Image (cartoon, rainbow, N blue to C red):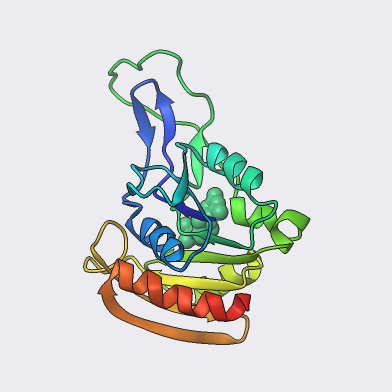
Length: 207
Ligand code: CTP
């Protein structure tokens, strides 16, 4: 199972809180896994690759992604959370389009942390869990902290302060960590190639 794209948390019927994730990395992982013969379920917020080998579930919000992930976990062997899940949602979504005013304050509350909620849950314990860490500062320290806090098997560190890699870009360059430290540095290249190299690492763990 692969998640991809940035979640969109509604403010009113026409507006949402979102992020710059394009879904390209997650989609590349889904396609690369299908190329290896895996049965793939892709849970994505953006238009999915036109690939009949991939079972796609389209979602918008973190809550919807959480429901879709939990529904698909039984029987799965691998979860790759490449999605950029919003950390906050609006406390109360307006039923009607909000009218322009001089100033606006939105009351935000945390969304569900999908990976963290799976740590210690039998649903999550039964699969290999790979998380992504989108970081701009103290990047290694933050990624390793996420690995531990979310009890991940692997964390893929993405330096999103660089314009040439990461959110929305064509290429990526990542470092992969497990609880023992650095596992691999995947040099900058097109996202499908990074996806394939990442799956090489993952396949070794699964076998
Ligand atoms: N994630 C998640 N649920 C959330 C937020 C993030 O499952 N509500 C997952 C992401 O899909 C990713 C990992 O957790 O695999 C790390 O996401 P990231 O946005 O880098 O970190 P956060 O946990 O949101 O922490 P921070 O925003 O403080 O960096």
